[in-house]
Length: 258
Length: 303
Image (cartoon, rainbow over all chains, first blue to last red; front, side, top):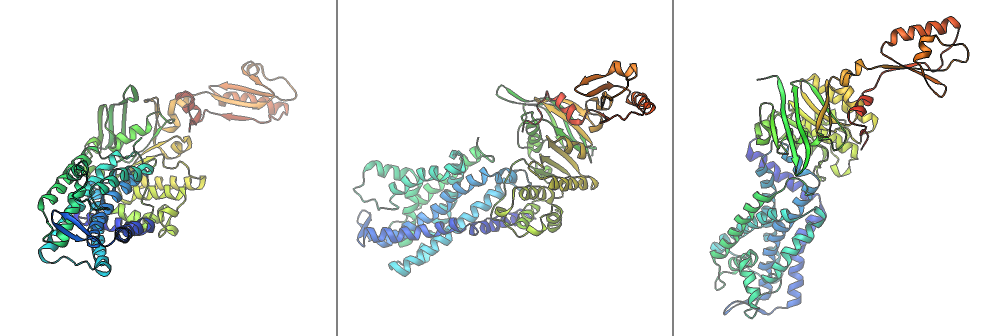
């Protein structure tokens, strides 16, 4: 079988196993929509100032923010936890003994995570259109959104792979992963929009890490002007992705950590 | 193309101050079934995982099918099948899907259904791995190793945890492999497994090979003394020569001899001549297990 065929088979196999674990699949899909409903209900229908002088509807803000959250869950969180699991039960070690190149095995997992991300963005958008009067991006915006989703999904996948090096075992994986990503999601305005009066340290943290840049690019490509879409945000996310990939290549372990 | 499948000289592996493998030499011919026998912690798994390419050696030369396994060449891995001691497969895939997936990695795999049948999982082919028993999962491990039709197979304690029937089946599978001309590198701590399967056995203890040879002559077993035992006859004195050699344990007499044929002849002629029945008469030679226990310093059965 050609390497392209092997990659396609890995994606298909990962997909099969994903849907056969309904609990995990359910939460991947349900969380973003659940949070969309909860946060919109909690924080009402006011306006959010997303940049100096730029305001958008709170529920529209959450449609894009939860789409960003969905991408991060499907890539960073899911990959880090599920790869720690496959490492612990010895699937990675076994695969390492076969002729299948490492890049094709992990590539299959990453491509699957990216496809799930795109599906989640579609579902979140459809939900937003149906219940929150969101408008689907068109034209240039659509391409900007697609680029943002794909770059973001790749970058957060690479960071997820790198994070497995910090996970001692599968039982600890959810705790480690959430300890990293949950504070960042809050500090980056995913759950509660950061106004101009947010503390400086919070803004600084948001500016350094990729989550806020990713959310900004998602919002910008979702709504278009006057909301600013800046390619520099996508670039920051991409740089984090490259750094994540380098760390993953250096520190990734195929065998359970003792 | 040499007819050596594996060649190892001066292999060493240290973990800090711990010397897991200390200067091992091994050669395994193409088509041979070779068993590395030893107690846990003796260096079996370290050795086999260096040969499989999982671990880097500290020193020494290693050649597997003409490759250095440390280079992890795909061309080498396409010719090698591996059963590791404890490895998982995706719990949500079925038996058949799992074997087919692994077969797809190899250039000329075996027929998937045939392999599933061979390990006795035909009835479970559409069952998810999740629902297999421990023994069935181990058989799936073997099926995965066979799927690629590799010419060299590493089996690291392949039957640990099998019930006697399943072990017999696994042994038949290994025997069939040799009929196909495959080379098998087996590690085990079961004496009978090594005896039944292996053309050649090496005993490893504390990182060193302490004996090597065909199971029948391992540790000069064939030259070792035989033991003749029988219950002390109720009447009559034993011939003086025998009486002088015998040692007594309870009612049992024991003779340790180098020429059992002659001694036995003398003993039984005497008994028949007197019309005495020698109760519990037996002649035994050291078993492979006795030799192994002696070689490894009585660490067998550490598991």
